[in-house]
Image (cartoon, rainbow, N blue to C red; front, top):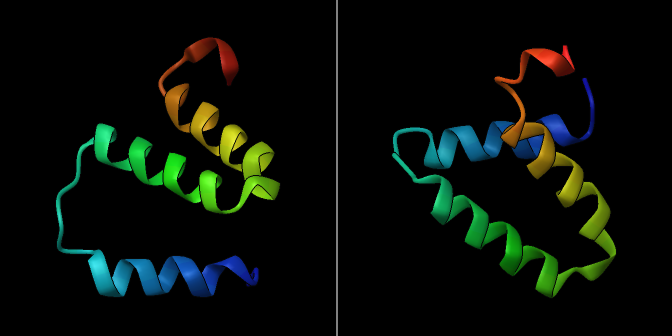
Length: 59
């Protein structure tokens, strides 16, 4: 188990019943990076990975 699994589990437990839009998620990611600029690269990588999940060329 990775350390991040705890945060992912908490997210699922606290907000798992909610429905969100990609626009809402994008705005939260921007807010996070504004508050924590040292995480710009990992957030960029996560956002790019999420954006390309359905791209067959990246598999």
